[in-house]
Image 1 (cartoon, rainbow over the protein chains, first blue to last red):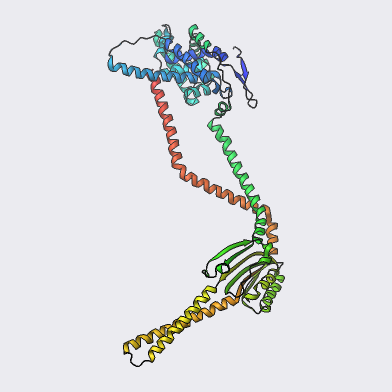
Image 2: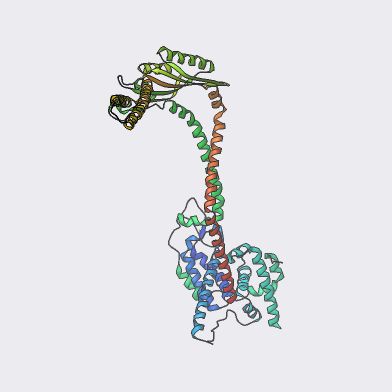
Length: 176
Length: 361
């Protein structure tokens, strides 16, 4: 694990170690990108959203409080909101386009190279992919992941278990 | 069964390994874009720190603080009010003299019922207003005097009676009662107005004056009006009598005049009676004297305590605060219920929307 540069807050009463934004961005960039890649299932969208996420984080960096959670979880929360906003605007755009243009082929920039795991991942829902990303790839613990997703810890564990089982089954099917 | 940190790593070991091996690193252009952002310039302010407290945590802190504050306020209120109660008695005792002065001194022709209220401290009792000589005035005074004990109360009651008699007055009523260590005598003394000031001071010296009230009502105009009315009625009766002496009067006129004379005589009797009563009022002042012996009770009260009284006051303060809170709760509960419903509704809607977006993505 890389050592994160830290600064001390300017408030003498509230002295606590606070990492710099640049250091956090350097450390967590891959994690955030990975999460968004799984959530969106689209590489170019994930790249755009990663940039957008860090821009947002940059603007609200002063609100980050390391006492309340890790920078990774905080960034994932921002990333999730950014992604949901994107889905919402995409849905509106699609609806608008459907009104005027019918049978327009969708341009797909798939997230992963073709393979059994990639195919299986593509068949999972976004909600399932994001819980897998948070718990397996980003290695967030149960309560933290649950907080990012806005659900209970039990619901998070159940969702993860089901997602992994389904992924395994889909992979078996893909291999067969 | 939900997967835990340990068992999903073990149960899906191969899958987890494959997932972690996926090429998911951020491309260089994204990395460069993020690097270009640099470091936010603005330092943290207090406003940035404050939201760090979640509402649950704030509530956990604020609720005991409010309760503590309320209890402290109640205790302070209890202590202050019990400490102040003695002062209050003293203030009451020295509250001074309220005088309802008749307007006659300044305005001889004015209505006798009008008056002015003047408050003077008890230390200035030498300047207790005296009735104006040569004018008819209703002089009323009430005096509360504290004496040492019940034995002294009997003595002082007798002394007050003697004071009234010594000035040619009398005791209109006496009501003396004792209860345990305390007692009270209520006397109504009628004393000639000319001697009321001396009598008043003598009565005040029977003990410690705790309250007093003086009222002077000018009756001069009332007496003048009554006298004028009496003269008018007498003249009227005389005129009617003279008219009735005539023998040439028709029967119906005679009857009417006789009825008028009877009515005038009745009115004359009534006004004469009122005039006598007014003159009697003006000649004798009325002093209501209350002698109290509360030393034992007061000592007991003081001994019983400051702490007990402070506790009682604090409890009543808390009860009052509780009543106010309950009232606010009742009044605001519909709004609170609406706010909570709105909060949960918005949250549920947001979650459903998120689920829908994620399932569609």
